[in-house]
Image (cartoon, rainbow, N blue to C red; front, side, top):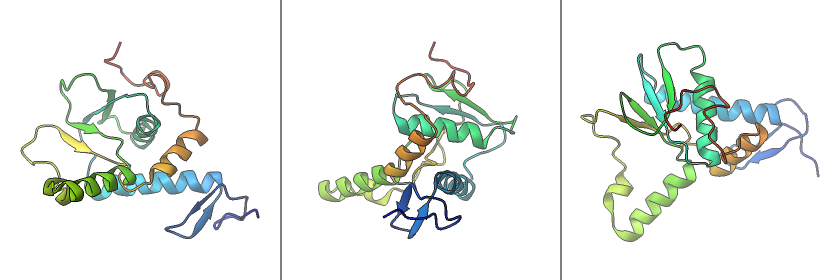
Length: 169
């Protein structure tokens, strides 16, 4: 049975069990980007003068994170996104952790008795480099689908593809 998008009635490509929505390609992409932007605003992760390092590890989550940060900061001349090879001058490091990664970490902490994993108290405010995880509320399945829809391969250095400065070369 072909389901229709809950927003526009085009053919749906994804069903979000947690929201009850069937989404077409366009509305799926908009939904994921909206969630990431909301998380960034809520946590106040983007600040004037930021140099955000993105570790390029070859995975789809990293490729998606890089693409999303580039898209979100496109009009911001006061924020620089760079591929991560050293922390020279960085103010934040962007991590590609998803909702599933955090759930596994919490469960592992519970089973092993490591209370620090369960409490997840966040970064120490005295740290000079902040960690940000814009994908932390998005299931891995949705991050992978987003990457596939936008043909974001995690197999190569993405810095050329999105026009970023690269310290990796």
